[in-house]
Length: 227
Image 1 (cartoon, rainbow, N blue to C red):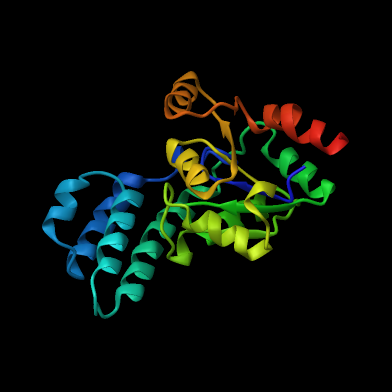
Image 2: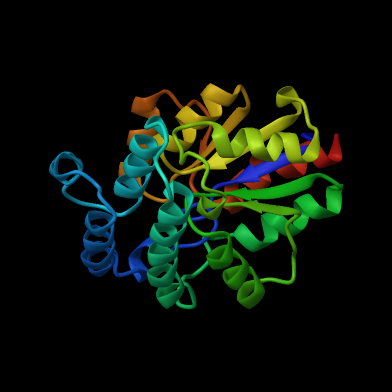
């Protein structure tokens, strides 16, 4: 049994994505980033999406020397995305067995962390409305760390619990999650609710994929707890 289990949030624990007005959020995020000096080529390179745009801006600005107000600009950009997440999070339903898997892990004594490109405030709100099972930490976008596939947030969680990478696992649904786990050197378990999602993970090199958190609990968590 691993000492630390890390979970992605959206489409791994909760179905947040379909409940959020991502297109509407872009109409707010892009003008804001332009107003604080984001270059035109950034928007040409990333014409759609909020999280990719935010992370690309973060990477660009942190690569520059003597850029005043970088942290404040990133924080404000993150808060814009957070606002649209919060507008939909109350409607986000848990994936099959997600709550039970978190509860089962807590009973084993393992530490549990949510490591997500979503805001920690979004995750806290969802957990408060959907489960009494607490998690030990949330490492979210509001840390201003690099988003997955960068390993930064996973490394932060490992450091927070002083856990060796060989004693940790990460559960996620995307290629970015898999790449972050590989870069970090932790075991990866995929959650793929659809055949298309499973095919994407397989193509990216994932070898242990489950159709739901419930299947993960049956196939991995429960046997390890009994061992």
